[in-house]
Image (cartoon, rainbow, N blue to C red; front, side):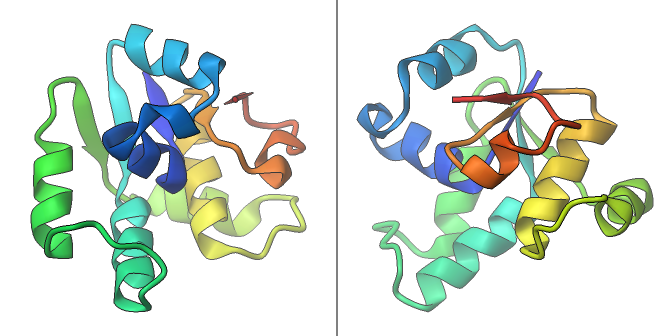
Length: 127
């Protein structure tokens, strides 16, 4: 299983050309492609603020994107929330903290272009 960062999920769904070759290979070979519930929140915020255009109503886009074969939605559990809060990491972005905590709790690598996540040694990242 791999966890996709929000931008990786969006790019995978929209245009793989934005993904690195390593990211494409990881996604294509994964038995499960995990999406954190925080990515649904983050996409909705970006769409509401006009920073992305999904081409469909946000809820519809999310429902369709989560219905893809091998995709699983990972809920934010109390364990993930606790790990996110206790990370010894300077990154204050709540979405990043929840994504990293989700990958850590599920012992899965995270597919991300985010250099701050790559620099955090406690989680394996792919890009």
